[in-house]
Image (cartoon, rainbow, N blue to C red; front, top):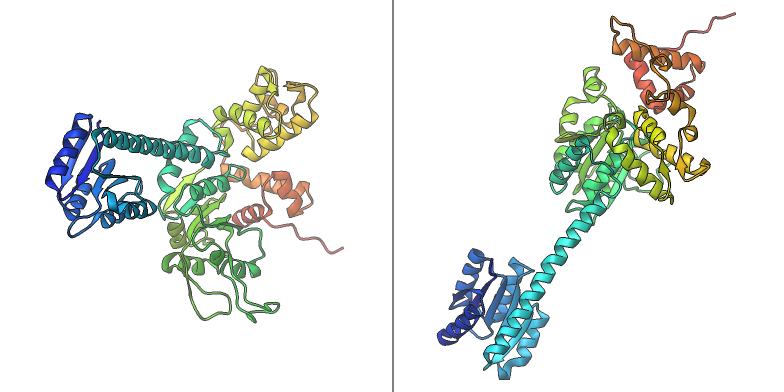
Length: 460
């Protein structure tokens, strides 16, 4: 497709000469007799280049230049000026014009100036495209996967990133929920603003409100000065509420109001503060079940989950494991390390309860303890070899759980696992949670869900 050049000049004869010479050179040309008509035509034809006379009645060339740049910073403008007004043309270049030509000019000078401008324009567009591709690769640099499940996730991220919609990212621990949140932020219009993350489960309940919304001096014992909360710190950017499912029930109405009204009120304060923040959240809990048992507000859930994104566990995207192995080897400075067929099959067959985080930790351990640059089955941890059904490893008889032929309730199975883990660890919740490879708050949630409590000690 030929690039379109828009000529704006009130001199009819000069306009015709320009049109003839540029058409003869192979360009598509549109013409206008005034600045006002030229701008109307600009919106219709979207030219690659505008050539405008400096001196015209009504809207002059400088005004045309300013209006074109407001509409499209990428469109180049060449100014036509009389010999005695070169200083004005130089000022126009400082204001954004690409070049100028002085009257009278010859055909070769005109064609050379136009050719250089269009070549520069093409390079600018190509450079922008390449930067866009590079930015996209950078945005997803920590997200490895080519499986259908991850392609679906990446597609949603691309579509939702530049909106202002709240996003709720769900998935098991270790699946990369924060990486997804950071990728959404990096691809959004807020990418130059702050990305502020807060783990709602890691902060004591009595301090969480202050951490989120801030407080004023004297709001409580120890509040010796005003403090900005995470929402205020994220102004103009994105706040990421990790483990939002653990947010205490009494704080949920305040978060709901922040999402609805786009205002917050610091603890102990009376004035509401306006918010310009995008909210992303994540949880590894079954929110719908939490709603059913009254542990999470349904209206808050729908405010957070305008766009839901579910990250599949690693066991449901085993095709990505070889890619992740190469990525983590490279990340830890061992690009030359490979895995033999049997060790690779075993790693791909393992269930990875800790997901991608566990896989990276395993790779790091293998790289430190390896005897050679080829990882073999003997190099793998015992728990991976014993819990895999890959050829040459444990079979069905070696599984941790053997289900009865008549079937079994998943909820009863989960309850039994939690009880056994607590019993094995003398009802120490921290130790039991570590044994199950889950956060302590998740264990407590399961105990409340199944009404599990430690047995009363007998009074001897």
